[in-house]
Amino acid sequence: MRIGGIPVDRLAERVGSTPFFAYDRALVTARVAALRAVLPPDLRLGYAVKANPMPALVQHLSGLVDAFDVASAGEMRTALDTTIPAEHISFAGPGKTDAELSQAVAAGVLVEVESENEARRIVATGERLGITPRIAVRVNPDFSVKGSGMRMGGGPQQFGVDAERVPALFKELSDVDILGLHIFAGSQCLRADVLCEAQRQTADLAVRLAESAPVPIRYLNLGGGFGIPYSDRDEPLDPRPIGANLADVLARTIRPNLPSATVHIELGRYLVGESGFYVTRVVDRKESRGKVFLVVDGGMHHQLAASGNLGQVIRRNYPLAVGTPGGPVERVTVVGSLCTPLDLLGDDVLLPRADVGDLIVVYQAGAYGLTASPTNFLSHPAPVETLI
Image (cartoon, rainbow, N blue to C red; front, side, top):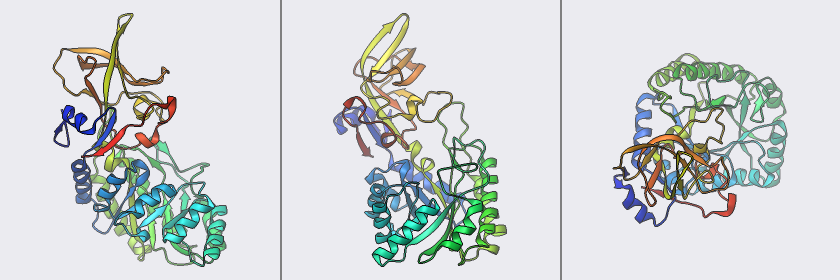
Protein backbone atom coordinates (compact mmCIF):
# COMPACT_ATOMS: atom_id res chain seq x y z
CA MET A 1 0.00 0.00 0.00
CA ARG A 2 1.21 3.51 -0.88
CA ILE A 3 0.22 6.99 0.27
CA GLY A 4 1.37 9.80 -1.99
CA GLY A 5 3.45 7.24 -3.87
CA ILE A 6 5.34 6.15 -0.73
CA PRO A 7 5.00 2.61 0.72
CA VAL A 8 3.12 2.99 3.98
CA ASP A 9 5.73 1.15 6.05
CA ARG A 10 8.44 3.47 4.71
CA LEU A 11 6.20 6.47 5.38
CA ALA A 12 5.83 5.33 8.99
CA GLU A 13 9.62 5.29 9.31
CA ARG A 14 9.79 8.77 7.76
CA VAL A 15 7.20 10.13 10.20
CA GLY A 16 8.97 8.44 13.10
CA SER A 17 6.00 7.24 15.15
CA THR A 18 2.49 5.91 14.97
CA PRO A 19 -0.32 6.79 14.88
CA PHE A 20 -0.23 9.57 12.30
CA PHE A 21 -2.35 11.31 9.69
CA ALA A 22 -1.08 11.60 6.12
CA TYR A 23 -2.69 13.82 3.50
CA ASP A 24 -1.96 13.35 -0.20
CA ARG A 25 -1.62 16.77 -1.85
CA ALA A 26 -1.93 15.28 -5.33
CA LEU A 27 -5.39 13.94 -4.46
CA VAL A 28 -6.45 17.36 -3.19
CA THR A 29 -5.17 19.05 -6.35
CA ALA A 30 -6.94 16.51 -8.55
CA ARG A 31 -10.23 16.89 -6.67
CA VAL A 32 -10.21 20.67 -7.04
CA ALA A 33 -9.32 20.42 -10.74
CA ALA A 34 -12.09 17.88 -11.39
CA LEU A 35 -14.60 20.10 -9.64
CA ARG A 36 -13.46 23.24 -11.44
CA ALA A 37 -13.97 21.42 -14.74
CA VAL A 38 -17.74 21.06 -14.13
CA LEU A 39 -18.49 24.31 -12.28
CA PRO A 40 -19.41 27.56 -14.05
CA PRO A 41 -16.22 29.56 -14.62
CA ASP A 42 -17.60 32.67 -12.91
CA LEU A 43 -18.47 30.79 -9.72
CA ARG A 44 -15.95 31.19 -6.89
CA LEU A 45 -14.82 28.14 -4.94
CA GLY A 46 -14.14 28.48 -1.22
CA TYR A 47 -12.62 26.07 1.30
CA ALA A 48 -14.18 25.63 4.75
CA VAL A 49 -11.06 25.51 6.91
CA LYS A 50 -12.88 23.75 9.76
CA ALA A 51 -12.82 20.54 7.71
CA ASN A 52 -9.06 20.35 8.13
CA PRO A 53 -7.07 23.35 9.41
CA MET A 54 -3.59 21.76 9.15
CA PRO A 55 -1.46 24.81 8.19
CA ALA A 56 0.49 23.06 5.42
CA LEU A 57 -2.72 21.78 3.85
CA VAL A 58 -4.36 25.21 4.06
CA GLN A 59 -1.27 26.71 2.45
CA HIS A 60 -1.52 24.19 -0.38
CA LEU A 61 -5.19 24.98 -0.90
CA SER A 62 -4.50 28.72 -1.01
CA GLY A 63 -3.10 28.19 -4.49
CA LEU A 64 -6.13 26.18 -5.64
CA VAL A 65 -9.26 27.93 -4.32
CA ASP A 66 -10.59 31.48 -4.39
CA ALA A 67 -11.55 31.99 -0.75
CA PHE A 68 -11.41 30.59 2.77
CA ASP A 69 -14.14 30.38 5.39
CA VAL A 70 -13.01 30.15 9.01
CA ALA A 71 -14.84 29.41 12.25
CA SER A 72 -12.45 30.70 14.91
CA ALA A 73 -9.67 33.21 15.46
CA GLY A 74 -7.17 30.36 15.32
CA GLU A 75 -8.38 29.32 11.87
CA MET A 76 -8.40 32.97 10.82
CA ARG A 77 -4.72 33.31 11.74
CA THR A 78 -3.90 30.21 9.69
CA ALA A 79 -5.81 31.60 6.70
CA LEU A 80 -4.20 35.03 7.00
CA ASP A 81 -0.76 33.40 6.84
CA THR A 82 -1.51 32.19 3.29
CA THR A 83 -1.59 34.00 -0.04
CA ILE A 84 -5.39 34.35 0.09
CA PRO A 85 -6.11 38.08 0.70
CA ALA A 86 -7.97 39.03 3.87
CA GLU A 87 -10.93 40.34 1.87
CA HIS A 88 -11.41 36.81 0.49
CA ILE A 89 -11.64 35.28 3.98
CA SER A 90 -15.00 34.98 5.71
CA PHE A 91 -15.63 34.26 9.39
CA ALA A 92 -18.78 32.29 10.23
CA GLY A 93 -20.09 30.50 13.29
CA PRO A 94 -22.22 31.30 16.34
CA GLY A 95 -20.75 32.61 19.54
CA LYS A 96 -17.98 34.84 18.19
CA THR A 97 -16.35 36.66 21.09
CA ASP A 98 -15.71 40.40 21.16
CA ALA A 99 -11.99 39.66 20.84
CA GLU A 100 -12.59 37.56 17.72
CA LEU A 101 -14.79 40.26 16.19
CA SER A 102 -12.08 42.82 16.85
CA GLN A 103 -9.45 40.64 15.18
CA ALA A 104 -11.66 40.07 12.15
CA VAL A 105 -12.57 43.74 11.72
CA ALA A 106 -8.95 44.82 12.16
CA ALA A 107 -7.83 42.27 9.56
CA GLY A 108 -10.49 43.27 7.02
CA VAL A 109 -12.06 39.81 7.08
CA LEU A 110 -15.72 39.45 6.07
CA VAL A 111 -17.80 38.64 9.17
CA GLU A 112 -20.86 36.48 8.53
CA VAL A 113 -23.32 37.68 11.15
CA GLU A 114 -25.23 34.93 12.96
CA SER A 115 -27.67 36.94 15.11
CA GLU A 116 -29.08 40.39 15.79
CA ASN A 117 -27.00 40.63 18.96
CA GLU A 118 -23.82 39.79 17.07
CA ALA A 119 -24.71 42.46 14.50
CA ARG A 120 -24.96 45.08 17.25
CA ARG A 121 -21.65 43.97 18.74
CA ILE A 122 -19.86 44.20 15.42
CA VAL A 123 -21.21 47.74 14.89
CA ALA A 124 -19.83 48.68 18.31
CA THR A 125 -16.51 47.01 17.43
CA GLY A 126 -16.21 49.06 14.28
CA GLU A 127 -16.98 52.28 16.15
CA ARG A 128 -14.35 51.50 18.78
CA LEU A 129 -11.67 50.67 16.20
CA GLY A 130 -12.60 53.43 13.76
CA ILE A 131 -12.92 50.80 10.99
CA THR A 132 -16.04 50.04 8.97
CA PRO A 133 -16.74 46.31 9.39
CA ARG A 134 -17.36 44.19 6.30
CA ILE A 135 -20.32 41.89 6.92
CA ALA A 136 -22.66 39.41 5.31
CA VAL A 137 -25.80 38.11 6.99
CA ARG A 138 -25.87 34.38 7.46
CA VAL A 139 -29.43 33.25 6.88
CA ASN A 140 -31.26 30.36 8.51
CA PRO A 141 -33.44 29.42 5.51
CA ASP A 142 -37.06 28.42 5.70
CA PHE A 143 -36.21 25.02 4.18
CA SER A 144 -33.81 22.18 5.00
CA VAL A 145 -31.76 19.79 2.89
CA LYS A 146 -33.37 16.38 3.19
CA GLY A 147 -30.82 13.59 2.95
CA SER A 148 -27.96 15.63 4.40
CA GLY A 149 -25.80 14.23 7.18
CA MET A 150 -26.31 17.35 9.32
CA ARG A 151 -29.14 19.83 8.81
CA MET A 152 -28.01 23.38 9.41
CA GLY A 153 -31.06 25.22 8.17
CA GLY A 154 -34.84 25.15 8.52
CA GLY A 155 -36.63 25.22 11.87
CA PRO A 156 -34.98 26.68 14.97
CA GLN A 157 -31.19 26.86 14.57
CA GLN A 158 -28.18 28.29 16.37
CA PHE A 159 -26.84 29.11 12.92
CA GLY A 160 -27.80 32.31 11.16
CA VAL A 161 -30.66 34.77 11.32
CA ASP A 162 -34.11 33.38 10.55
CA ALA A 163 -34.98 34.33 6.96
CA GLU A 164 -38.15 36.15 8.00
CA ARG A 165 -36.12 38.34 10.41
CA VAL A 166 -33.46 39.41 7.91
CA PRO A 167 -35.40 42.41 6.48
CA ALA A 168 -35.76 43.91 9.97
CA LEU A 169 -32.06 43.36 10.63
CA PHE A 170 -31.17 45.12 7.38
CA LYS A 171 -33.13 48.18 8.58
CA GLU A 172 -31.30 48.16 11.90
CA LEU A 173 -27.77 47.91 10.47
CA SER A 174 -25.71 51.05 10.08
CA ASP A 175 -22.02 51.95 10.01
CA VAL A 176 -21.14 48.64 8.38
CA ASP A 177 -20.36 47.60 4.83
CA ILE A 178 -23.10 45.08 3.98
CA LEU A 179 -21.80 42.84 1.23
CA GLY A 180 -24.55 40.25 1.09
CA LEU A 181 -25.79 36.88 2.24
CA HIS A 182 -24.60 33.42 3.24
CA ILE A 183 -27.26 30.71 3.03
CA PHE A 184 -26.31 27.14 3.96
CA ALA A 185 -28.85 24.47 4.80
CA GLY A 186 -27.01 21.17 5.31
CA SER A 187 -23.86 19.09 4.95
CA GLN A 188 -22.63 15.64 3.85
CA CYS A 189 -25.26 15.08 1.15
CA LEU A 190 -24.61 12.42 -1.50
CA ARG A 191 -27.67 13.09 -3.68
CA ALA A 192 -27.12 15.48 -6.58
CA ASP A 193 -30.86 16.03 -7.06
CA VAL A 194 -31.27 17.14 -3.45
CA LEU A 195 -28.33 19.52 -3.68
CA CYS A 196 -29.64 20.97 -6.94
CA GLU A 197 -33.05 21.63 -5.41
CA ALA A 198 -31.41 23.26 -2.38
CA GLN A 199 -29.37 25.52 -4.65
CA ARG A 200 -32.49 26.59 -6.55
CA GLN A 201 -34.33 27.35 -3.29
CA THR A 202 -31.29 29.20 -1.96
CA ALA A 203 -31.10 31.41 -5.04
CA ASP A 204 -34.82 32.20 -4.87
CA LEU A 205 -34.54 33.09 -1.18
CA ALA A 206 -31.52 35.32 -1.84
CA VAL A 207 -33.44 37.24 -4.50
CA ARG A 208 -36.38 37.76 -2.14
CA LEU A 209 -34.17 38.95 0.71
CA ALA A 210 -32.19 41.24 -1.58
CA GLU A 211 -35.35 43.31 -2.09
CA SER A 212 -35.05 44.54 1.51
CA ALA A 213 -31.28 45.05 1.49
CA PRO A 214 -30.18 48.70 1.80
CA VAL A 215 -27.52 48.23 -0.90
CA PRO A 216 -27.14 45.90 -3.90
CA ILE A 217 -25.98 42.40 -2.98
CA ARG A 218 -22.29 42.03 -3.86
CA TYR A 219 -21.60 38.68 -2.15
CA LEU A 220 -23.72 35.54 -2.19
CA ASN A 221 -22.48 32.34 -0.57
CA LEU A 222 -24.64 29.38 -1.60
CA GLY A 223 -22.96 27.05 0.91
CA GLY A 224 -21.91 23.57 -0.09
CA GLY A 225 -22.92 20.31 1.53
CA PHE A 226 -21.23 17.97 -0.99
CA GLY A 227 -20.69 14.60 0.69
CA ILE A 228 -18.15 11.82 0.32
CA PRO A 229 -18.74 8.06 0.70
CA TYR A 230 -17.77 6.58 4.05
CA SER A 231 -18.87 2.97 3.50
CA ASP A 232 -19.48 0.55 0.67
CA ARG A 233 -23.20 1.38 0.89
CA ASP A 234 -22.57 4.97 -0.13
CA GLU A 235 -22.65 6.00 -3.79
CA PRO A 236 -20.09 8.71 -4.60
CA LEU A 237 -21.57 12.08 -5.51
CA ASP A 238 -21.56 12.97 -9.22
CA PRO A 239 -20.75 16.70 -9.42
CA ARG A 240 -21.64 17.06 -13.12
CA PRO A 241 -25.39 17.62 -12.71
CA ILE A 242 -24.64 20.00 -9.84
CA GLY A 243 -22.37 22.06 -12.06
CA ALA A 244 -24.99 22.16 -14.79
CA ASN A 245 -27.65 23.17 -12.28
CA LEU A 246 -25.47 25.95 -10.89
CA ALA A 247 -24.91 27.31 -14.38
CA ASP A 248 -28.68 27.35 -14.90
CA VAL A 249 -29.34 28.99 -11.51
CA LEU A 250 -26.78 31.68 -12.25
CA ALA A 251 -28.21 32.37 -15.70
CA ARG A 252 -31.92 32.26 -14.83
CA THR A 253 -32.14 33.56 -11.27
CA ILE A 254 -29.02 35.18 -9.86
CA ARG A 255 -27.51 37.19 -12.71
CA PRO A 256 -30.80 38.84 -13.84
CA ASN A 257 -31.74 39.80 -10.28
CA LEU A 258 -28.40 40.22 -8.50
CA PRO A 259 -26.07 41.49 -11.23
CA SER A 260 -23.50 42.86 -8.77
CA ALA A 261 -23.12 39.64 -6.77
CA THR A 262 -19.96 37.57 -6.62
CA VAL A 263 -21.31 34.04 -6.13
CA HIS A 264 -19.50 31.45 -4.02
CA ILE A 265 -19.87 27.84 -3.06
CA GLU A 266 -17.99 26.66 0.02
CA LEU A 267 -16.78 23.10 0.44
CA GLY A 268 -14.79 21.33 3.13
CA ARG A 269 -14.81 17.56 3.34
CA TYR A 270 -15.49 17.18 -0.39
CA LEU A 271 -12.15 18.82 -1.20
CA VAL A 272 -9.97 17.07 1.39
CA GLY A 273 -11.80 14.14 2.99
CA GLU A 274 -10.71 11.43 0.60
CA SER A 275 -7.11 12.64 0.53
CA GLY A 276 -6.44 11.68 4.15
CA PHE A 277 -5.30 8.45 5.82
CA TYR A 278 -5.01 7.61 9.51
CA VAL A 279 -2.21 5.09 10.11
CA THR A 280 -2.00 3.20 13.37
CA ARG A 281 -0.01 0.15 14.52
CA VAL A 282 -1.22 -3.13 16.06
CA VAL A 283 0.10 -3.40 19.61
CA ASP A 284 -1.84 -6.49 20.67
CA ARG A 285 -3.75 -9.33 19.09
CA LYS A 286 -6.12 -11.20 21.34
CA GLU A 287 -8.97 -13.68 21.18
CA SER A 288 -11.99 -13.43 23.43
CA ARG A 289 -14.62 -16.17 23.29
CA GLY A 290 -14.07 -16.87 19.64
CA LYS A 291 -13.64 -13.25 18.50
CA VAL A 292 -10.33 -11.79 17.32
CA PHE A 293 -9.43 -8.26 18.44
CA LEU A 294 -6.66 -6.16 16.96
CA VAL A 295 -5.69 -3.50 19.50
CA VAL A 296 -3.96 -0.52 17.91
CA ASP A 297 -2.03 2.43 19.32
CA GLY A 298 -4.55 4.98 17.99
CA GLY A 299 -8.28 5.28 18.34
CA MET A 300 -11.28 7.54 18.74
CA HIS A 301 -9.26 10.26 20.51
CA HIS A 302 -7.70 10.98 17.09
CA GLN A 303 -10.38 9.77 14.68
CA LEU A 304 -13.70 10.14 16.47
CA ALA A 305 -15.77 9.98 13.30
CA ALA A 306 -14.43 6.54 12.35
CA SER A 307 -15.53 5.23 15.75
CA GLY A 308 -19.12 6.20 14.93
CA ASN A 309 -19.34 8.82 17.67
CA LEU A 310 -19.56 11.97 15.53
CA GLY A 311 -23.13 12.22 14.32
CA GLN A 312 -23.76 8.71 13.00
CA VAL A 313 -27.22 7.40 13.83
CA ILE A 314 -26.32 3.88 12.72
CA ARG A 315 -22.62 3.08 13.04
CA ARG A 316 -20.89 1.94 9.84
CA ASN A 317 -17.27 1.00 9.39
CA TYR A 318 -14.97 3.36 7.55
CA PRO A 319 -12.82 1.60 4.93
CA LEU A 320 -9.83 -0.12 6.54
CA ALA A 321 -6.75 -1.84 5.17
CA VAL A 322 -3.68 -3.64 6.44
CA GLY A 323 -0.65 -1.65 5.40
CA THR A 324 1.40 -4.70 4.39
CA PRO A 325 -1.18 -7.38 3.53
CA GLY A 326 -0.19 -10.90 2.68
CA GLY A 327 -1.85 -13.27 5.10
CA PRO A 328 -5.18 -15.08 4.78
CA VAL A 329 -8.34 -13.02 5.17
CA GLU A 330 -10.06 -13.26 8.54
CA ARG A 331 -12.85 -11.57 10.42
CA VAL A 332 -11.59 -9.23 13.15
CA THR A 333 -12.59 -6.25 15.26
CA VAL A 334 -10.16 -3.32 15.36
CA VAL A 335 -10.19 -1.37 18.62
CA GLY A 336 -8.16 1.52 19.95
CA SER A 337 -6.06 1.93 23.05
CA LEU A 338 -8.60 3.76 25.23
CA CYS A 339 -10.42 2.34 28.24
CA THR A 340 -13.90 2.59 26.74
CA PRO A 341 -15.96 0.26 24.53
CA LEU A 342 -16.70 3.29 22.33
CA ASP A 343 -13.11 3.10 21.01
CA LEU A 344 -13.97 1.03 17.97
CA LEU A 345 -12.40 1.56 14.54
CA GLY A 346 -13.62 -1.55 12.71
CA ASP A 347 -16.39 -3.84 13.91
CA ASP A 348 -16.37 -7.39 12.56
CA VAL A 349 -14.46 -6.57 9.38
CA LEU A 350 -12.69 -8.82 6.88
CA LEU A 351 -8.95 -8.07 6.69
CA PRO A 352 -5.79 -9.96 5.77
CA ARG A 353 -4.24 -11.39 8.94
CA ALA A 354 -2.43 -8.72 10.93
CA ASP A 355 -0.11 -9.28 13.85
CA VAL A 356 1.61 -7.10 16.42
CA GLY A 357 3.69 -4.47 14.61
CA ASP A 358 1.57 -4.39 11.44
CA LEU A 359 -0.01 -1.15 10.26
CA ILE A 360 -3.74 -0.53 9.96
CA VAL A 361 -4.85 2.28 7.65
CA VAL A 362 -8.20 4.09 8.02
CA TYR A 363 -9.36 5.80 4.81
CA GLN A 364 -11.51 8.94 4.37
CA ALA A 365 -9.52 10.61 7.15
CA GLY A 366 -8.81 13.97 5.53
CA ALA A 367 -11.72 15.88 7.06
CA TYR A 368 -13.06 16.18 10.60
CA GLY A 369 -10.34 13.92 11.93
CA LEU A 370 -7.80 15.13 14.47
CA THR A 371 -9.34 18.52 15.29
CA ALA A 372 -12.83 17.00 15.56
CA SER A 373 -11.68 14.41 18.11
CA PRO A 374 -11.10 14.43 21.91
CA THR A 375 -7.31 14.39 21.58
CA ASN A 376 -6.63 14.84 25.29
CA PHE A 377 -8.91 12.02 26.41
CA LEU A 378 -6.84 9.73 28.68
CA SER A 379 -3.76 11.88 28.00
CA HIS A 380 -2.29 9.86 25.15
CA PRO A 381 0.20 11.74 22.93
CA ALA A 382 -1.12 13.63 19.91
CA PRO A 383 -0.45 12.10 16.49
CA VAL A 384 1.75 13.65 13.83
CA GLU A 385 0.15 15.16 10.72
CA THR A 386 2.06 15.16 7.45
CA LEU A 387 1.32 16.44 3.94
CA ILE A 388 2.78 14.18 1.27
